[in-house]
Image (cartoon, rainbow, N blue to C red; front, top):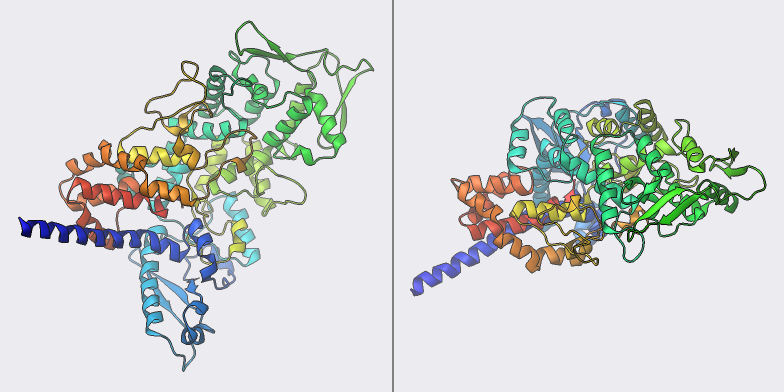
Length: 628
């Protein structure tokens, strides 16, 4: 009995040591290599980046042969190391052999330099980490342009002398496009099928397939509900049934690929009950019903312009187009009719006049709803704001940064970093009849979207030009849905408006919740927007200490791992530990484990408890938490 207990203690101690190694393997390399954006910002003070070598004309179409590697600051490594690295320029040489990327870290230090043994060891370890990293995140395929997006992006990089990253690996692309298009992780069998597929056009085919899924409509409706402020509020503004009707209309429009100009026109010009004509809730959702407040919301939402910064006469002139919007209550509680009120906005001193944002003053014909006059101007193909605003907003949703950034603050002193790219996207949208799926397909198929997050230049000033993919933390809704999918559990939601007025769904995914007032503690901790202003800055995707502690130590996550059937099913259905490890990695990270990871994972996949611990470790890695 004593011997058995002693062996158990030893085994537990060994497993804890292995788990520590797993966490170090999974978490430390992204931190040290700067692959993930959050990691880059955290260690920025402790890393230095060499200047990127200017791009030769052939560099855009040829595989990269050299890229700069980060090295630790000499100041932190003692006098001898400072001497050794003062003139040294470490670099990573990539050798493409049999589809693998071999990385060799070398230095060009001068003769007579003294290098501490610890520094040499650190360099070898960094080389090993870089080798594993590049093999997972980058593709050996050559970089070349596919469409007009690539023409604009790579031409700009060439002019700036900035070297673009290589293409991302199939594993990274699979996860990236699933989340960007559907807000959902690929399931293990989907990941396995895609990674085994040898079709050269498999990426294009996957994009087309995902754009037809219900999850696409759910996720992109969620994005638009943030902008359009779709949430029930008590005791004013939207009531739950109006919010749900508004969400259904938005989701249906996205699912059916309603032309964007029609989507906007229906909201701006509609009249009727906010219960029965969902589009009119565009006006009902605003905090203020004053014409000037409506004009500000319209400018922000569809022109990406902050009208409060305009000259007062311009804002007052645009407000005239919304001065005749009337609001009339009905006998049903919380129902309201939005209509064209001919009495409002009529001064009795001749024809009404409104001023367009261009400064042009136009007369509004008698008995004409001014909203139609303004909307005709807004959606016109020659409008300098309309198509560019949605093209830039779409780019922001896919890249985490707008061509004009922030994407809802277009002004003369905040220019586009690549005007040719923005113009090209807007022209494509207009010429296609405002086909939003077509715009998404164009961007997703581009090499610019499919670049690796491994930045070859290490130059933070290159980020606005999209030389590499910029990692960002997942949306709160995406994270909790992913955790529930992995563990086979559901989430409990709450609302300040009690049932039966608010329907609290059971086992519904967070990205498909129709009402912004329905929330959970997890969504609030991880920065879900309150939907008060319609601005992108309301959503906070910065990783905080509180979020990390919640993932590491909370009963919420621990109970999901322990009580959910997802991980237990993996254990039951797998024949051996290797199959379990592969299934865990495919389920959580959408890729197979590396050789080093497999060695460690095999130790933990002996039983259900160990499998849960492995899953817990992977869920806490930056690779899981960040879109990369």
